[in-house]
Length: 182
Image (cartoon, rainbow, N blue to C red; front, side, top):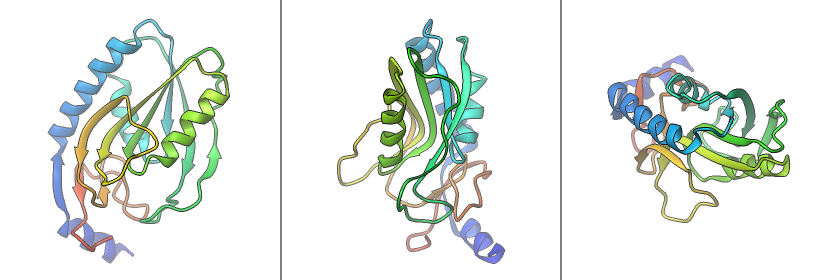
């Protein structure tokens, strides 16, 4: 497996450098700080992919907030999605709160939409979504993110939380696998 990971890493295309991603996170934080000022939000990280973007974004936010996490995934360390699996739901009561969901990527939008719906079912007043990457597809998605760092073409990505078969989440930059590589 490590040979495959090394091959993917060596042949990938760098789409956004670490500095470009950090600049995008700065921009996202400015927008979130303006929009959510005074709302006492619950900051919900979507695990595992959202952990890098959420951590990098968190220290840029200036309003008082509480932190929680959710783990709902269609990928489970694979390169294609299937049935949504919930392994962690937020422990913080969401009723009457503003919720900010932070994830690595808005791909098909199925997982993010399910998480937003769950938060609303739990009584959240308002739910906002922030994604580091919005992948452009040739068909509509069931949800659009409120805050977006960067946009990419429809390729398989890794880095800044996004993985290739469970690896490469820690890559400093956003990379695309060579066509046919995932």
